[in-house]
Length: 136
Image (cartoon, rainbow, N blue to C red; front, side):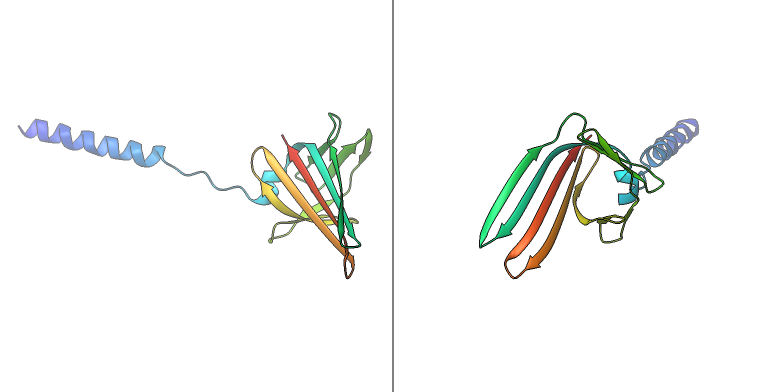
């Protein structure tokens, strides 16, 4: 009888220890860590608003339109067979700044999708909006 109780107790302890060690949560990746890698431009939407009207241009991305965000802060952007490699940074409020260029709001970022948004106001009723959609 004592032996059965000891075995049951050991079994319960063993199962409990396996459950606790098997359920370790992964550390959540930061935005800077998630963005690193190769992204294919799926679409570019440009809205030039003036005269009270939106003027929307929607360009699908091409097979060769690739953005590679490097961990060292360099962005290798190849669009229409032309490559540029500016530096980039990501702020705590989820903004992506292309050094020497625009600052985009990161609207969506997960393992497969990235959506960037930019808006520049040039007058009382004039602005430019850009939405870039990427996938892996």
